[in-house]
Length: 523
Image (cartoon, rainbow, N blue to C red; front, top):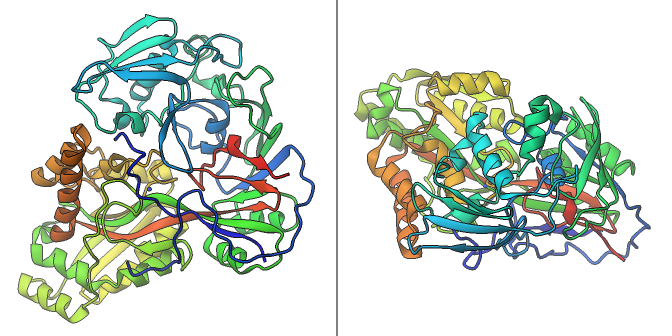
């Protein structure tokens, strides 16, 4: 029987400086494999040329705009990284670091001495400062994680040393610096963003040798890389418009690994007993939520929001969206395994009580609302399932799904009355602020923003506090407020799944955007 690995969340008590009634199974420590059987299959000889599949289309390498998570991990490095086994923040480009004050407003970072870009130039403190600021100037959707630096007063002490000054002290500072690829300032200024389709320059272990739109990208290991040398010599990432085709190619031996499987393929992989591969269920560190916008007058009634919370069978919604292997019913707006998560409970499905609340609120005959979402099979299934339950309360919810760029514009304008919220790829920094960011009062997504001073105060209090007890208290209050007020209704914590051939091992923080530098070829 093949090995089934479910990587579940650990209590991250050691890891962050700072993506119940279950639809899916067991528990184990993050990074530890739990065997689904003791099969006798022998590891076949494996090539050091790795070929993997992903349903994410080929994209360029502009760090601020690309969704090319696999490629960005190969070509670039970040200042810090999360250890996939422990969740501990460790240095990547940062060789050493220290806070210069008790308020954590000045962070001194020394860059790894031998770190160079693929064009041979050294990675400098100036490159780091340029790269962090670039997210703001490029209007990246990650800009919110890089807007708390006082760039004008941050200091470059020498070629390899800088001091980052913070506008506000930030308890999650090191976790958030696990985001953000560092690029070569001189190369960008010479070539511009257009060069980042197939000729990126980064300090990572690989260079991109070919990037064919709609088909594949190929990466070659750098012989001059100064960090820990990864095992795969070349990596080819094939893009699939149909995930089912990807899984068939994997089963036929054309791929060494396949990532972000759909529900049916995940179920099939879990049930397989051939011993030819390992399937891993990877937490996204994300909680899918149904968010009600304050642009609907009816939602301003506490009774209406309570009716929605009780009038939908959220377990059924979760299972309809992700099946039984790729989710667990959420018990908070923060996912299992994330630091500061508490169990505030779930809403009991009580349709009769929900109808009574609607009548008491004066909306027995219901009202009309619009949900706009990004084209995504799981998100669409979730919205449509919720739609059916709301219809029983005479709430007529129309759904409209668009391509990412189209949907984002509409959501930013507040054209949607409610929203199914998730984080593509999950909370990769395993930081509460990644999950809660879109709900802040300052959120540019007007369809997801929760315009409430008390709730916002808890979120920002957790973000900016340094003391661990204060942070835990603020995030606990945010979670309880969300449960009590029903503006943000947690649905389920999600997983992604991936499969690897026997003889290939991979522990990573993301099943959607895996770090393939961590691939290990078993002896």
